[in-house]
Length: 75
Image 1 (cartoon, rainbow, N blue to C red):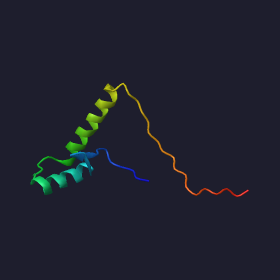
Image 2 (cartoon, rainbow, N blue to C red; image 1 turned 90 degrees about the vertical axis):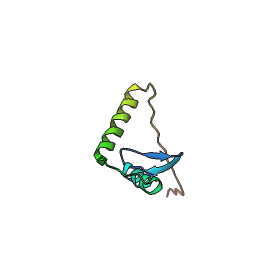
Image 3 (tube, helix red, strand yellow; image 1 turned 90 degrees about the horizontal axis):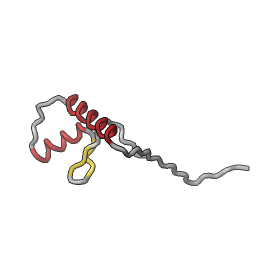
Image 4 (cartoon, rainbow, N blue to C red; image 1 turned 180 degrees about the vertical axis):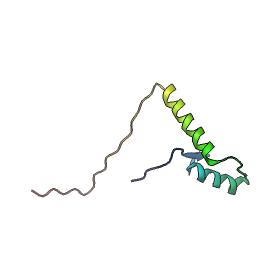
C-alpha cells in the first residue's frame, strides 16, 4: 500500500515530485535554484496553508480503500 508520510506533498507540471525536501532537490537540479531559507520555514508555511484550507472549506471528506486478494477461509 502506498502511503505518503510527510506534511507537504509537492507537484510540478501535474507530476508528483515528493516531499518539500525532494521538491527543493528537484528545483536545484532542474532550474539551478539556490535555497537560502530553512526547510522548517517551508514546513510551517505548508502546515498553515493546509489548516487554512481545511478550516475555510465546506467540504469534509475521508478517503479509504480496502483491498482483499486471495482470501481463503477454512471451515
